[in-house]
Length: 194
Ligand code: ZN
Image 1 (cartoon, rainbow, N blue to C red):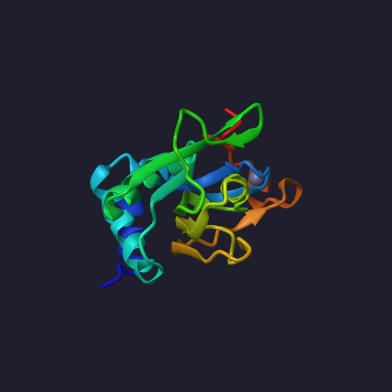
Image 2 (image 1 turned 120 degrees about the vertical axis):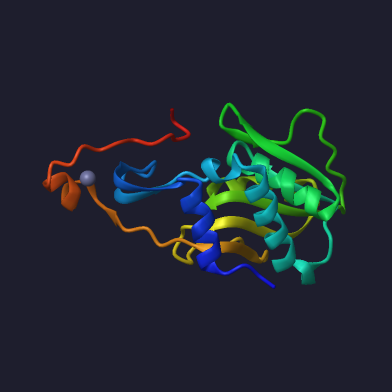
């Protein structure tokens, strides 16, 4: 049986991954909530459990030959999802701005992959991984994530998207931010720019 949204939210709260306050997001928008998925994934039992749930959700797609995630957010989850499927777990990484599969990871033509990311907001990193895999003529079975923060707007062309949890975050333009107007100090949580 699939895990409920309430059970997932409970895991986020137990990990202190879902923070309340006044945050500047990587997009530049402000929000009263911030979610740091690494705080969930630091617990192997939570990461394994969520990976098992993702596997179950994608059961009808058949098994991949490998699972791949973009560094850094996708690395841990790709590894645990690969463990759940009993296949290889690898990662793609940016070098000088370009997403690449490095370190001698083998990605054979015609092999089947699942692409995972911890949190999908715009899906930009995932799309870059998809592009690399398409160039290598890999068959992509699905894109998956723990959290979909795109409000349902993230799409990956022909490939199905299987997130475990929909997180709708309230955001404000800095000039219209009610929290700024109340002079609540703002924090910039860990971002890819730091
Ligand atoms: Zn603000």
